[in-house]
Length: 280
Image 1 (spheres, one colour):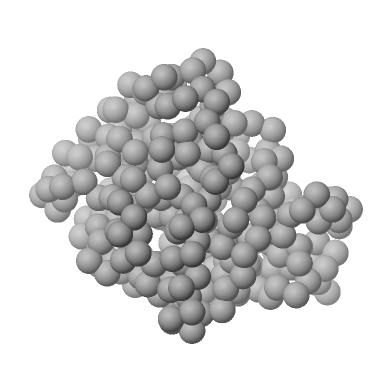
Image 2 (cartoon, rainbow, N blue to C red):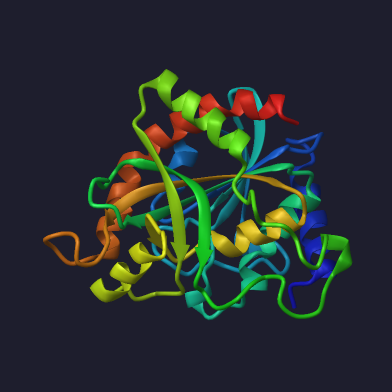
C-alpha cells in the first residue's frame, strides 16, 4: 500500500534522519530523470538517504536512476532532491509512482521541479537542448487519483489547466536568457513504455499536438497539482523520436545525452530559484 498513512511513515523517517541538516522544511523539491542524477555532483549536498532505507518508498530499477533522496542547497535555497524515479513500465501503479511526491508535500515542499529525458517530435529540435514543458498529454492509461479518494491529499477532481506554472516557466525563460542557455518550450506526451514508440505512433502524437515524448513525469505532476504544489517541468531532449533520425534508439545514448546536459540544467535551475522564492 502507498496511501496516506504510509506517506506519513516515510515522511517521519526522512525528517528524523535529516533533522540535524534541515531544521526547517525545504520549500522546493527536484526530481531528476534518466541520466540526470549526476546533477547532484554539481550542487551542495548536505545529507542523503538511499531509497531502500525509506519505509514504503518505491525503488528505481532502471539504469541511470541513482536511487537516493538528498538534502541540498542551490543559490541559497534548500531543496529535497530525488536522484532517480520509478516508472509505470516497471510494473507499478500510478499511485506508487506518485508516492514520493506525496511525501515531499508532507515534508513542506511547495514548489516542484520535475525533469526528464524526452524524445523530440519536432525535427528542428536537437538532442542536448533543454525544453520547458508547457502542458502534457497523458497516454499512460492510469492516474494516481484513480481508486478510493483520499480527501487529505486534496480535491477529487483537481483542475489541470495550469499544471505547469506559467509564472515558473517565465522565470526559467528569463534565467536561461541571462545565462545564455538555449531553451525551447512544448507539450509533453507521456506513454507507458518501456519500448520506444513506432514511427506511426510519433506521427499520431504530432497530429494531436505533442512536441516531446517520454515515459514519466505525468503521474507525479497530477499528484503535485492535487496537493497544491506549483510545478516547473524541464525536459532534456535526448534524441529525435522514431522515424525522424537516421539511427535507432538506445537507452545508453539517452543516458549519455543526459549526462552532457547536467551542467546547463544545473545552471538553469540555479538561475530560476531566486524568482521561485519570490513566488512563495
